[in-house]
Length: 549
Image (cartoon, rainbow, N blue to C red; front, side, top):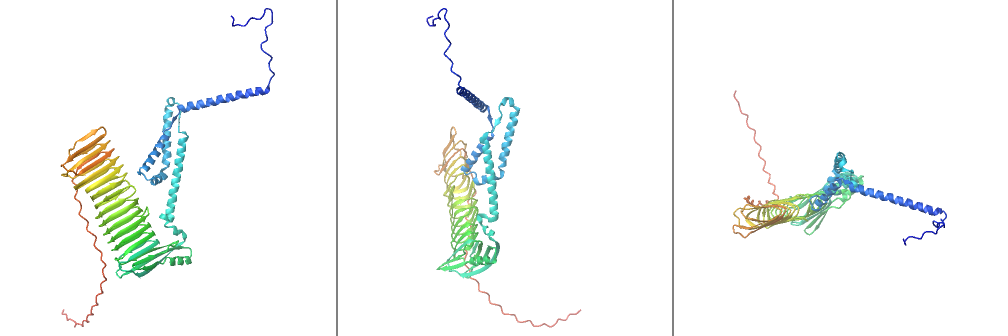
């Protein structure tokens, strides 16, 4: 009871209920109203945020976005692994980019139909989101840009040619002129040809000790005076310096000169061509060629060849050589056939490389592939995703990536290192050391029956097979094969991952005989003309014969 206040006195009035109220303040009332409105707006905002969060939590996204990201990831991975050319993939996309929109529309239509049939179960509809819309717009812009670039390249090739080789054609009408020039050349000397615009054809069929030049001049101009000026500038200049003869043509804007040169076969040749094809044949001395925009064709040369090519679209053909062949630079297709000397190639080659019947050593070096062999009896072919060779004499060394490899009828030692591709090797007697290291690919090795060797093979995530009765050891995904066949000490070492290992008994065809050497070319002296025969005496008239009827 002590906690309660005492009661008011008896008979007295109750105390007042509070002090006097303050007067009405309009500013305070407005501030209170604004505070209430701000609180209401904050409440509405929080409700909207909560509603969006709840809707996002139950929203189901479309599968279009993950598929686009997956496709882009696979594309960039293949480009990085050099399985797909970025340029050709972009060219393909420039033609077929609408297929991406069609596929995305089909997927969205299928999802819409599925959601409509299961509306009660699925809840909120699907949404592709702003990020996927941005990706689709980016792909559309990329496709349009690729298409425009392809059309621009086609127009440029049509109007100006590869490497702007037809740029002169926009400078006026074409006029042609033909001329012939002859000049003495030193015996066993050197001829140097410099031609910035035009083809160069050289053959060693001259028998009079002179150089004969046929010139086909072409000039583009709008008036006759300019044509004559350019024709005069295209006249070749011939200079002699000791045993060296220089044949040069000036670079003329809107003009070119095609040269056909006949020279003695006993002289060497050096050709520098900037825009034009080069053809050389029937010579007995070294040949040096530098070509920047044009094909190269060399045949029937009894000397060494040194060629430097700087044209990704050019083709190189070399046939019937009795000397060495060296090709450097970057070019397209290469064909080398029937060479008795060594062949060395170094650079970047974007087409198909085909070598046949090389009696000397072979060396092939690019940014991705190193190959060398002591002799090539049959064929060696390299493409973007494969390398095939047959009738090889070791030691054979091959280091490459992203290629399926086939080496058939290998005589002697062989050493192969590869990644992301299959390796198939067939050896013939006498068997040499075999060493194969592969990653992400199967290995198949054929060994001649009756040979003696020692095997050390292993694979992970693959199977192991052999025709020699050797027992393998298994440890989870790792399989190994160790043993000796015939008590030999020749080593056969094989290792790979994510692929099978197979050891086979094979009876390979014998190595082909060495190809016959090309016939030696000798400079034949011209035959003296035969003396004219004496005229015959006129035949006297015979008496007419009599006939009886």
